[in-house]
Length: 399
Image 1 (tube, rainbow, N blue to C red):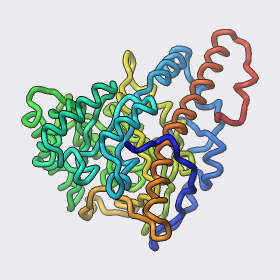
Image 2: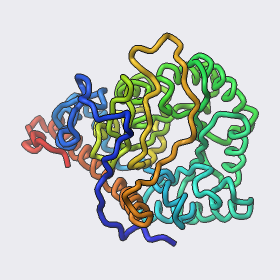
Image 3: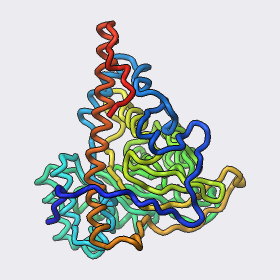
Image 4: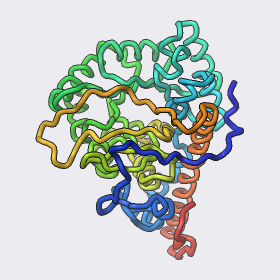
């Protein structure tokens, strides 16, 4: 079994596609990754500047207590895409990733049915899936299944796998070519079949915002389908490609978000729109502090978000799909499932080691962000309940 604990730091690659370049971001967005690491930001922007104390200064005592409690119990999941290259070109298996999640004290594993090539869940027979299920149970881990399609045969296959391994949820997203209105119609038709695919109501299904559709279009799909077991998965960076900002997208999707993919990206200009290049967490243009705070606070009596998937995918580039000057019903080209290319200037062994290191580092980074938020919330709660100013709330940094 691969050892995930002995990884050493490596630098993030700085390659961009020839038609894309790093941009001076629009107003309300940071133009420097260094600035992003040093500052936190105003509520609901996901990209705007601000002071750390602003993250909690407007919260009531009840909301501060809720935030602290939910940070303490945040359901962090490993994600197979963080080990995408190792699963394609290395020797890591899905069971290895269960052990990695357990070693890092995570709640579970989000696993794509095709990750692992010939070792994937899709390629396993029922006996092998049963062994996978038993490993997850012995380690006390939850499992969520993912597929990159809403087509009936793909959803049927994902649901069959989910049954075999006793997964809790199935994530999907559409990859149709055509006018946006046509993609929405086809996706609605696909997802209406979920009642037949899962007549017992065994699974929760999530539709991910995946670069081509805007937030209000995803909300339209979910509300039109009208299946109470179908909600949205919020990805930290995928709305960029649909020419939306993270905070704006979250504000639109908020009532329907139950799962999350955490990653960082650098926003790049692409033919007048925005593409994104995934990078190491904390080194890009996404404000983890604001998004995690807002997501953790969703839900009154119980957390609305039930899984935060750690989806580090350093080096993956996704082009722009939506544009500020697009027509009312724009055309979207066909897409392949997400993949990350191997760099030409790095050995396979080094690249695989760097990917393992990046995945382990993300776990520590996200936990450090959560620890910083918790400290600020506790200090602000103390300030509200004792009416005595706390000097430490005036610090310029969180972590």
